Amino acid sequence: MPCEDYPCCGHEAGDCPRIDSRGRERWRCVGCGKTLPLKAASSFCTSCRKSMYQQMDRDDFDYGMNN
Image (cartoon, rainbow, N blue to C red; front, side, top):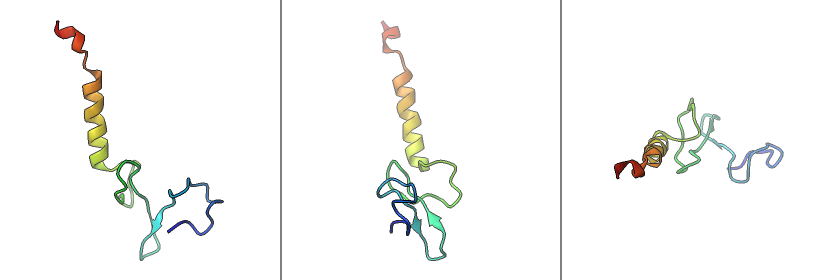
């Protein structure tokens, strides 16, 4: 459900929070779309953050050092 004042809310199209049955804003993970916890400190869920960090670790390895 979009914000009641979209597009004036400032969110990107489709990026407005969902309002739960108690009237609280529920945001979705920008990586996978999973609903985030109410007091999430990141826009990525735990699974997406973990896979991002694993990918960064693989990208940082210098394979040229193995020769």
